[in-house]
Length: 232
Image (tube, rainbow, N blue to C red; front, side, top):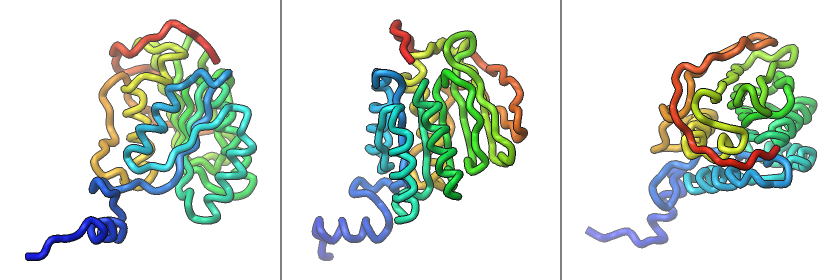
């Protein structure tokens, strides 16, 4: 029996929509927005993990919301960013909502919006299919609500009792695993071997479909990573 040459295997993998490692690639694009002074390097680590699993991901500063919105719109229309996923931390969370709002004005859907300890309460626009806010109550983070016309799924998850703080929530591996699960679910399960559920530090999801989501109580307390610095 003749063996396949590497070039042939690569071509077959491309036809089947697989990466060279044999893992199915998720579609779409993930845009991540850092907090103040770009100190939230946990987002860079998260982007690297996503890229390693075949998910296109790029990281921006919180002041680049307009640039991200323009780029996402261009890539959406070209077909290279479908679905669109937005992830923002601290000030970057507000920037991620601003990107979603700008895309909403252009009639472009956002499949997933993930906010990490936002420092201001923002209204999730109606073009967002699913929004998840991972925050720490009693600190800098806050819950978020939904704008009029929102018909998606909104989750406010409080990680205070899970041992997180404003800085560690964007860097903890357990949080990254949970977000990666959300991303692959939004991409239609294109992540292959990645599981969409993580039992690490996360309370159970509580879905809210109204304009004013109810407060969410954590279902379980687990210890998470801690870091001392506190920045926006």
